[in-house]
Image 1 (cartoon, rainbow, N blue to C red):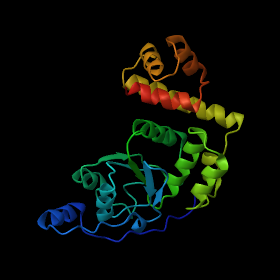
Image 2: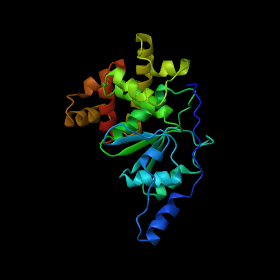
Image 3: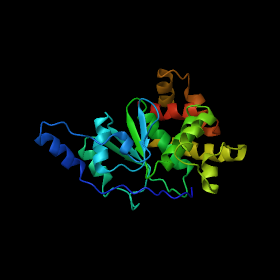
Image 4: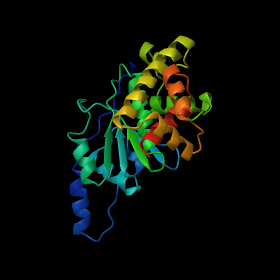
Amino acid sequence: MTSVESYRPPSTESPVAVLQSQNRTSARVSWPTPETIHNWRRLDDRITTSGQPTEPQLAGIRALGIRHIVNLGLHTHEKALPDEAASVSRLGMTYIHIPVDFQNPTDEDFAKFCVEMARLEEVPVHVHCIANYRVSAFFYRYRRDVLGMDEVQARADMEQIWHPEGVEARGFLSEPTKRMEADRVARIRQFLKAELKRHNVTYEELARRLTEIGDQETKASVANKLSRGQFSAIFFVDALRGQRT
């Protein structure tokens, strides 16, 4: 992706200082409203997205009831917080970092993103990068390919924030041709098999867990799908859910 993310958040006091100030006074703390966060969007009643929050804005996000932060930006970016993981942790939230090269997002990045979306599917979560460009692109593809949202609607939501340009963006976001789909499926299959191995989940155990959540699978059917690489996005997400059950 070749567009320049131009937002620069102001430097401000730490979230710990904000919370300490709250403890020292009975007066109501005036949290930053979501609209003050660069390119803040609410996708539904559970998911919000934005560009890079400032540290007080992280406290404001927590005040919304959110307890999980996913960051697709790079820690080395000049506009990143000095230590966002520590700042988020001090606020009592979990921090997940999926570093995505803005110029070269990959299918492996997208697969990791799908893993976290499956894992956090029932809880409020805030997903950000530097300017909400990466995040909006990832959600466009996720909503189109995994959730089955109408492509026009999914694209319209992304284009409220930006219009991806360049070869990298077109390749990452395009609806796959047969050749592209074969390559993507091969990579996602390898990723899924590696995740199953990492969590010590056998095909037989995965089939049992998938059956428990409503997918009628057997050890043989799971093995067949993973060996041939012919499975739906829904199977992929359910398999990620199943390995963590």
